[in-house]
Length: 155
Image (cartoon, rainbow, N blue to C red; front, side):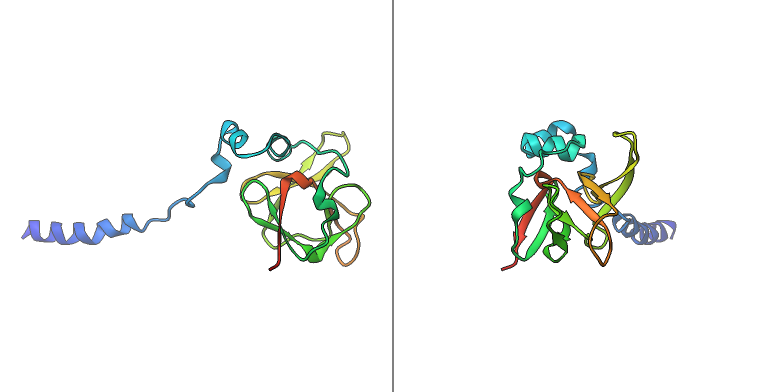
């Protein structure tokens, strides 16, 4: 009788472990620098993984005017809609708002004065800095490195 119940309860318990909460299929934040270097062009690696900054007016995305979505160049997460893009005159693609649940922020002291730096929520890739001198309705300027983005035009 014990063997029967043991088999019965063993059968009931085993599926619970099979349905346990698992990690996402791909955890971008665990990729090594060597793997990122293989995946990304050198300038994108420097910006996304080492928090570098590209030269102003060097990105073709600065002049992108089509409707579409700007995605993280590291993992493809949708970050900005073209509806929020504006010409800030700074030489970097700028947006007055990001898509919901797209970015994470932290304080950056590299220039001594604290600034708000933002990263892709999914892969942690550095995108740029946010300033309080943007247009309405938010008053924000998300100043983004073009090499940290890819653009997908609406079809």
